[in-house]
Length: 441
Image (cartoon, rainbow, N blue to C red; front, side):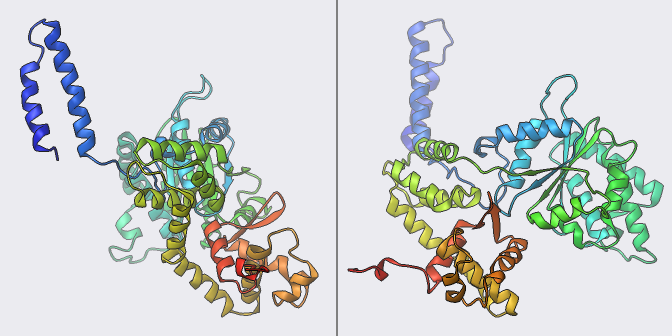
């Protein structure tokens, strides 16, 4: 809301409106508008520029994905299906927003703009649920012409096969509905995707979930979207559990065997993140020192969500015009470790430590990796120190944790995916070396 002085000034400005050709009066009017804009800016505090609790769809807030988006867009426009790997919370869904923008551009006469349909498969635990996921993606599509065309296609399906989303979702009684009919409805609905635009890219997010979906959904996808008549459709399959997704793509018994180029979501460079963070802190009147920025990026290891989350917290506690320092970053990190994130980590480790022997070995391996790093995981001293009976048990334990999305291998070296979880493990481990353990402390 404007102050009383600002309102009075606005009223006075009407007398300066350039109704005549008087140059002085026009200049006075222009300068007064500048003064008013300063008052309005002062009266309205800036918003926190950092986003971490959900995927980002604002292009101005997406960091360092332009080049990779163009590379993937050209592959898809060249009719190559793509499987994109990346652990949870590392920016896959945000990347698809950047990719959709790139796909909407023309890259020459052979690569016109493509329409994008994004389907979240996180809860596709049955064919009926898969059907509902596709319907929800169409009903909530951001482009009006796609929603309108989808309604036409669904209306045609209703007449052709009796398609009714209320029946599929169980909102009305499913008398006599068989699994085969659900599969037929899914095939018809997927087939309809190819009719929504001249060139279409279908994004299946969390594609590995379908490995647990009964009644062979991969065969339905292949028949509907990867057979004759679908040459104008390309698929992007994203997955957070690499091993599960690779099994679906590299097993010769699977319907989509060898049907997609496999890519890894690249890490955002430190330089790009540094520039993004510095600009947004400065632009909103809350500067941050270079030392604090370097410390923030070291703490988060440029992890997309954790970097944004820590920056968000630092911005919230900062005062206008006062630079954020290293101690402020540490304070925000500690608040996260003591809050809901820390509680979630505690629950994960309690589940493992109270489980069977294989679960307990996972917990031991996570503490070992966080404490000692990846270089000497199977060293004789570490084997006994962390309670393993022999070194051969360590790597299988890390493989199990990778299937949970807790660890990954980068350039042949194991790492904990979430840097905040790694910090929590070091803080909670009785075997981590601390300052108080050093001589003279």
